[in-house]
Image 1 (cartoon, rainbow, N blue to C red):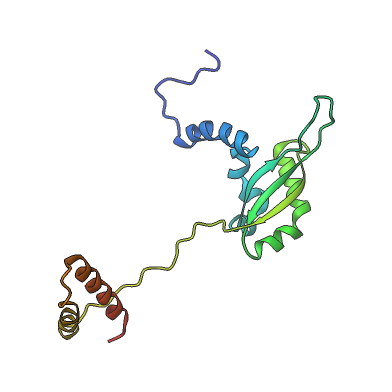
Image 2 (image 1 turned 45 degrees about the vertical axis):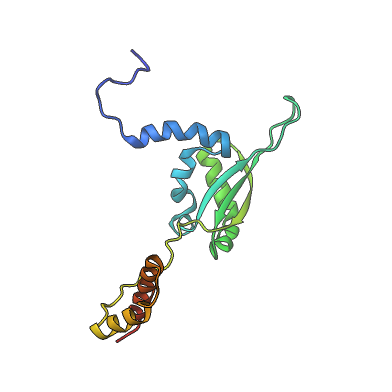
Length: 166
């Protein structure tokens, strides 16, 4: 029975996702999901919030007899995190190599790009229009024959007038 998973016991979804994603990440980016998940411990909380490991670029080996060469870790970061990351390059290389268990990384390449999901501008709440503003808007847009165009322009007018302070 060694090696079989216990039948009927609940398994965390994160374990199932790791089993699925780890081979894909290894093939596509040369990186393990464990490294991505442990990035905050490796880089520290200050850098981890503004950076993430993108991929590991292994050097091409022409023959099987070629000696092993360490890879390059590509890290995406944004803004000032690139400068902080550059100053801590040696420490991060040591931590990544310790995490992987061998001297896998020799250099770090910094790639500046947005790391966090851009949420955009927060939506403004519009104030309700007064009766006078509604009648003025209806009178302005009421002369348009096309119903769809009239409705769109009315909505645009409500937004523009609703953003103004009364």
